[in-house]
Amino acid sequence: MIEAQGLTKRYGSKTAVDDVTFTVHPGRVTGFLGPNGAGKSTTMRMIAGLDHPSNGTVTVNGRRYAQHRAPLREVGALLDAQAVHTGRSAYNHLLAMGASHGIGKARVQEVIGMTGLEPVARKRVGGFSLGMGQRLGIASALLGDPNTLILDEPINGLDPEGVVWVRNLVRYLAGQGRTVFLSSHLMSEMALTADHIIVLGRGRILADAPVADIVGRAAGTTVRVCSPQATRLVELLCGPGITITSTTPQWLEVTGSTAQAIGEAAAAAQVVLHELTPATGSLEDAYMALTQDSVEYHSTAAGWDPDDPAAAGAPPQDLLGAGLPQSDPEGAIR
Amino acid sequence: MSTSTLTFPEATSQLDTSPARNSRLSFPRIVRSEWIKFRTLRSTIWTLAITLVLMVGIVAFFSAIGASQSNGPNGTDDGGGSIAVFSIAVSLAQLPVIVLGVLVITGEYSTGMIRSTLAAVPRRLPALWAKGVVLAVSIFVVSAGAVAISLAVMQMVLGGKGLAPDLGNSQTVRILVGTPLYLAAIALLSFAIGALLRHSAGALATVLGLLLVIENLFLIPWKPLQAISPFLPGTAGSRLLMPQEQIDLFSQGATNTVLGPWQGFAVLLVWVSVLLTAAAMLMRRRDA
Image (tube, rainbow over all chains, first blue to last red; front, side):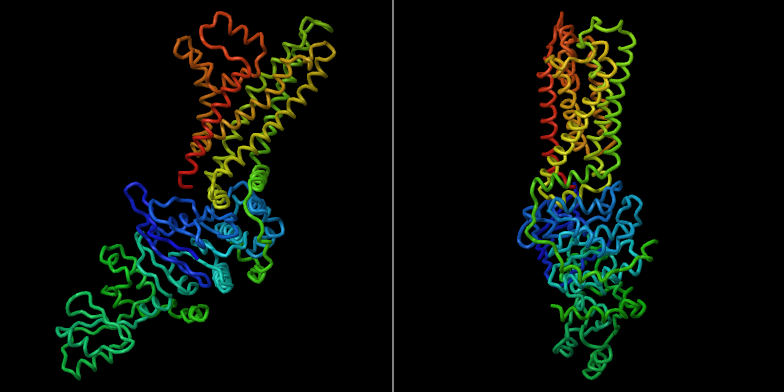
């Protein structure tokens, strides 16, 4: 369990992470999503005690990282695939890391096997491909068999096979009851891997919800309605499973209903409609809308604002949507 | 990319064979970890080898010259002069030691390794001290070995002429013991500056500039400079390697302080302590 309370990091006048509060629960994969520069890495580095928060606290299993007596056993972190001396072999790197905790050769060989590093384990890291470096980073994170894993962009530089491997690995680890927190700037990857998603933009949390919620909101179940009798329409539409939000007068966003049902209800009550648009945005669109760098989105911290004309004209479900069913088991895991 | 040729093992079922959970961080383990890091880099092996070769080589070279110039057995020199060669040998052999002392820490910053190190030892300072211990002990052992080999060489080359150092002489012993002590201290000085600056080239330039350029500038005969000069780290520390006659020579008519051998070494140790303390304070505070 990772708990951040009002976590803030300022570099001079720039605020990289701005008063962020969240909890990462064990037993599921929590995705940490945001564009480059959103503050994901800084947040993760603060969790692992590498950067000092300007304000706020972050604890792992109730303690600050540095207060653990066996940090590598508590938290495995891949914070930077290149956090390895280029002149040392992968084997020796892992051996040295493990030695600080009394972790021996057997375990080093084991994580080398698990991450498929055998052919290069005795070679110097300087000659590694990006993918090999990632594997070594993941091997280091697994070294202490920790209950909490923090993986910063673990699939960067991996080939498709490696991506699938990481996905299976983190889902397996979470299935064992471990806390898995992994960042990515790829919504599509998160949709496949994570159970829960925390979206960060410009250092603030834009969304913190189960992946199904975020996907649901993005999968075209929202309908934008414009009517001069919006208030009357709200009364008509209200019902179980239907959420209606309004950002501007006359404009409604209806979730849980269809354009057809809304249109028929309006006609029956002789309510005038000026516009009736199913928002069929893709996941990427949802993500773009979430992370768009504008102040109004920051203020709607609770979630997602589809009031973006571009989203309405977006192409229908792409392959992100096609892969979504795979992420459904998250309900079962929790 | 070569990764595609790799097998992806059943990753995950192996996790259950986890190591015993009783192990935790301890200073001896951190030292062991740092020792593995230290010995598994080529730069370590190279710099230590060069240190050894320079020491022995210079001693052998000067011994050979000394042997060819002496007028046969039972010459006038009682061996007190031949010991002075260690001072010359150290002044060159300290260069690879400085490089190693700096690289031990800046190499981690330049490659990003420091983040792995600090993730393993989040309290940070034990890692710094462990590195210092490994460095100082290794330099001490290697240079003590170099001194031993040098002595053997001197015995071979000069022994027949009665010019070999006299191990019963307290000054000889002081210089022989002082050589590894001085080099270990210089290594720690370089290490501290490396930890402060976190940048290989910058730290190397600083240490070399200080020891080889700035300290010599202070020899300019201008009183304020000369008053400070004896207390600079290299000048003070190398007193330990200086034959007494030479120190006496300095004292004659000297207006500024003349430190004795151990006093000088103590001043070097003060420099090392102050710089290490500053490095430790910054290391705790700075983001990795």
